[in-house]
Length: 394
Image 1 (cartoon, rainbow, N blue to C red):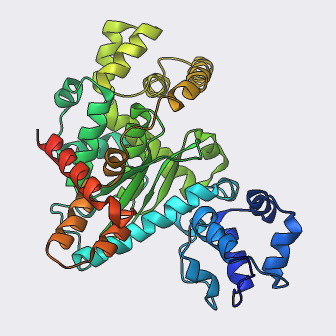
Image 2 (cartoon, rainbow, N blue to C red; image 1 turned 180 degrees about the horizontal axis):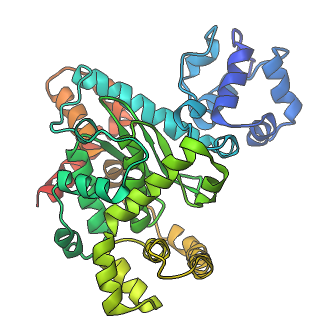
């Protein structure tokens, strides 16, 4: 169908492009067209063909095609509303893929409300039972949350591997009423984000980062949710120095909470006396707590065991090492599609969706929509979800 499509609302083209974070030039580049072509579409002087409209809807803007015929944009949360502690410049730098993942997460919250009648089925609920506000003593809060999750330091140390620690922490947070999703982000400097909701708070973690980074992101974002607000974890947190007032206190608290929770200061001090402060000691402690070397080094800085110059230089060196090896890891293969999708889904979310389907409450098409897959992929995904649940029990 090569004829221009009639009835498109040009304002919807502009809204969809801007909300996805694209410029007219970037859209034009995707079509290998002059930017003036896109500008003419948005001014109503011309229109895309059906094939071009499908590309805009499904590949670029990640929107339903019918949306472009709406008279007005639908009500939708803006990143500036969700992530109020981020500076305007940081919000503007959220790429189209990241903005799409935020929209998907908001859609998952709507789906959870539909699946449960609007009430979180999990009891007890951490965010309800541990009300919090800043300023607060991050170590006391960390101790309180650890007791609530029922995981002591000895159990944490006993996990041994960081991937096992990530699975265990994720399961514990879900048991406390927070839905934890994963996804592969194209925007490498975003480690994850959280969306607060009174009934269905959720966290989305960038699966492209290391297991230790994912663990830190999980607890940084859990701190945001404990404060009853949404947040974003950036790989480079220097933006915090640009903040002031409440926003600065919140981001600083979230970092301290994650560090205090994962690396308790009293145990850390005892271990440093025995091991010292050299790089071998840092690596030993990172393995002990299943965190990154940078988190351990940051704890040493916070405890005034090292100076800021050493921290910055060593952290930068490790960052360069990671970048140098990331390309090799990227080309190592994609793994099993169904296992990957099952891993990305919150286990409790997937269970609620499949349970509704088994009861005949929703159709296969609705189930596929909730799980963000095609109907034909449901059997394979179901098997992967069941296998994942069996491993958790084992």
